[in-house]
Length: 134
Image (cartoon, rainbow, N blue to C red; front, side, top):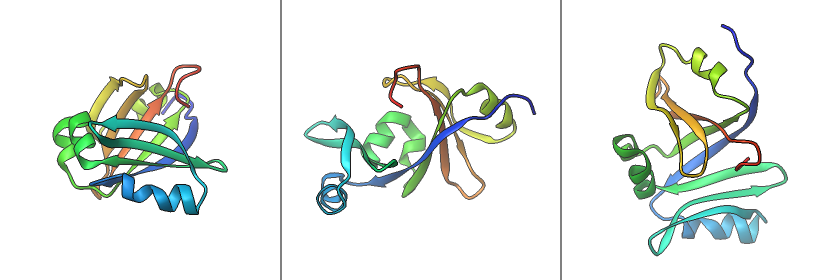
């Protein structure tokens, strides 16, 4: 395989019915800061939290289903989100893997692709433009 893989981070995305009840533990007790929040109607659909170089994300099942359709209806409690310098090298290495979400450009600027592992877990690989959400 050719191409240089350059992982920048690996972040778990935890899927829940509602995000707001999850925040006091992370924000008030553990001192994490909300770095990204995306409303979904009158509630939160997505949140990223960070502290000391550690990041985690929460997304509601409803937001996931809206964002990625039928794949979003699976009730996976966690997904892994890998930030990459570039996607071309990882896409070459994914040949033959089960592509759950084909390469796409998101509303938040990511160039991303998702695969499903043999165990059924989802792994997203995303590259952001210079100065983007990274």
